[in-house]
Image (tube, rainbow, N blue to C red; front, side, top):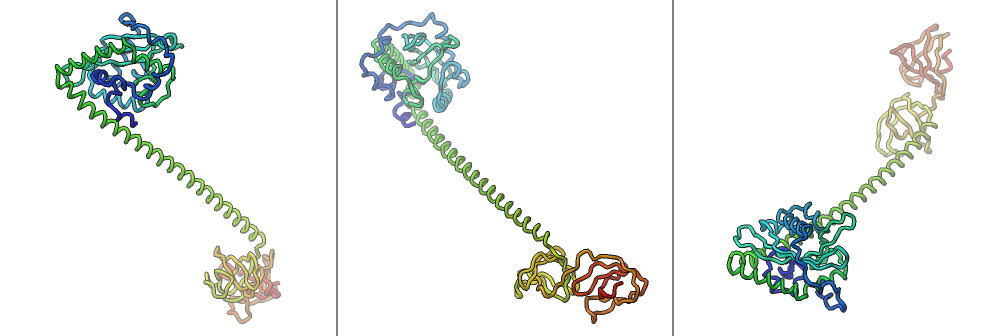
Length: 405
């Protein structure tokens, strides 16, 4: 975008011809001026101008382009000419704020590089908002014939804007032809005529001169700075968006990895628990004992279990057993628990009386004396030689296994 600041003359398409005559040699800018020194330039530029009064298609094309510029009608612009860069469209939009209308006075052309292509000079009057006198201007277009439709269109690669700012690549032969075209006597004669008309207009209307040479120049510089800033901000925003996208991808990958690791850990824990469950044994405490957090006498006590409390043992680790007590898992000294003999539940009709005690101890308090003929339910037998029995819904205790018959 630095070329935008070089000189207002580089944007001759969009304002008066006064600057054209003054700075004719740089009006196309550095983009193509060097090509004019090439040997054997394209010969078509030496032919005489053709006054296109009768070429209604060309006149309509150019007129529609100018109407679209004045109205900032992007769709109409793209229908008449292409391609456009974002910055050129922004520039046209800014200029449309100051232009009420364009009036095409004359159109001249020479044959272009290929059949159906034209080098076109347009003498146009620009009516600026709030200015009485229109400004004469001289514009250039490279017009080609669309091979598919047979209709004319403006090849906007060769707009003065693109040739100065090099936003889109151009054909070097066409660029050389344009550079040579600008130096031909009849072209320069037309430029001089338009320059004269511009000078007369600005002398007649001081407001026009001030507007073009001061107000408009300042506005163009302001626009260029603003556009450059918007490009920088857009680039920064795009860079930030890309950084955010990468960060989001990295976070998503990290989250997915963490989720996978957590799943694998959960699966491993579930598998380990399943293995523990498969090897679990039903046990019963034979004294008051602490359920501890780890197999250490000094570790935190999770619960204090009474005598004759049923637990599920998963594994034995030396003098400690890893057990589950009503959903709380921890460690109990192995010496305080005994196995419950599997598949020993049964109903028994007593043949003699037995004492049902609170715990598995002959000194434990007696709950009741079960009489001969009573039917009791044996919940389980234990390797301690005691069994847990139930006389009725309210009476559950322990009795010596050998007496239950």
